[in-house]
Amino acid sequence: MIRVMLVDDEPFIRQGLKHIVDWEKYGYEIVAEAENGAQAIEVLKETSVDLMFVDLKMPGMTGLELIAYVKEHSLQPIRFIVLTGYADFQYAQKAIELRVAEYILKPVKQEELTALLERHNEQFHKEIKAQQDSFAFHLSRVILGKYTVEDVEEVKKQLVPGQDWKYVSFEFDKEKEHFVDLDYEEKMQAQQDLTEYLRRLLGEDASHVAESLETDENVFGASILLEKRLYEEKGMNETEYLEELQKKVNVHADYSILVYAGQKVTGVEQLYESYQSIRVARCLHGLAEQGEGVLSYDDYKKRRPSMQIDEADVEQILAAVRENDAGQILAASEQIFAKIKKSDMTMEMVNAGIYHILYRMMELAKEFDDETNQQEVLSYIGKESFDRLILMGSADAFGRFVLDYAGYLAEIKRKDKQDVIDKIEEYIEEHYMENLSLKTLGEVFYINNVYLGQLFKKRFGIPFKEYLNKLRMEKAKKLLTDTNLRIYVIAKEVGFGNVDYFINKFVQSEGVTPNQYRMKKEGGR
Image (cartoon, rainbow, N blue to C red; front, side):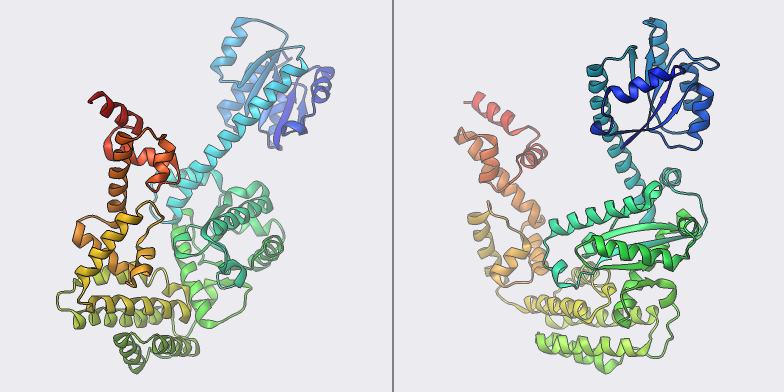
């Protein structure tokens, strides 16, 4: 609801405005009234208002003086509707200078007020959306540690002041059956619903809620930038506050929610450190197999070092990778993680042990093919392994990665690379209009998709997506020249489901729109 204050020295005018239309029907709530400017200023100190209807001629402080005062002292970001019985151009001119939203004459007609409310409602929500998008951008840069001074300043404007911060992640348990079965779009919708629900729960502190920034790592949910004032005002400690929120979101959501609290930091600028610590807590939670309450980084960091990963276990998993033996790979992964769970190893020791295994696996590529580009293998491991899978804290995730890597190495050993890429090129020529990706091609030709991407770039000098788009553009140009098909039909024919996306890609490729390209070709005939 848009929160409204009516400011007019005549009570019957205020009463008339309140009853002339159904405010709630148009998305408004009258939350306050004032009979002069001074009283309005006092009300603003205690009440949040989005829109003010202000009479121009009032005793003590005119409406224009009130507007100027509020804007100068930045009491709140308010839009103003000026009401007056004086059709005086100078008043209107001054109101325009103060950037009021509307200027209307009394007595106000019902249809005029209704149209005004409908206009303002649309403008208000557009502005709110723009503000939210801007804030989300600055906030994401702060959380990811890629911020500027401007980013920090913009974030601080929206958050309560404080020096005791934690990044707290509310995320869907991705291992639960019902959530695993969702596709990407459904998971994103569930994430958006969770974010909005948490914002409603926090009320005036809704700006402390943000969507998850880890969807590429298959982590979906929302986060709260927790400052101790949020729970102290409710007479709770941190754990009580977070557990209450967790109970509410678990009742509201259709899927189980896990809550991770990051390490405490002393300022907004350090939120990145707290955000990063969530990943450690998530990993160690998986390793420790603890319950589903609030899972705190501070609890996990007390783990005691007691052993390192056994070198015999490392050799066992490497032997399974050499043979590309799926059963042995999964069994060896389970064994390594079972020992980690029993050992109470610190995160640093877990990191070192896993990195050692990854390094040894990278060396295997050299055993299989002396011409193997070690940088490509290192890139594959860096991109696909630790950040995306290992920090998930499960033997299953680690085992899946090692299985993929074993398949990758098996492709390196293949001697028919040229024949395979020739067949794939022919397949793309026949199926370019379909939903193709390296993953789908890998499934068709039984080849590791990461390795396929590397082969593709070696052969054509460009990444697969660029190659596919280039081919589609050539097909589109031929259809534009040889047929009278509509643009949206051509877009679909060459593999673009969205015509706007097709037009943007065409402009990027050719420097003109499809229609302009067609007219240019027709003119040259």
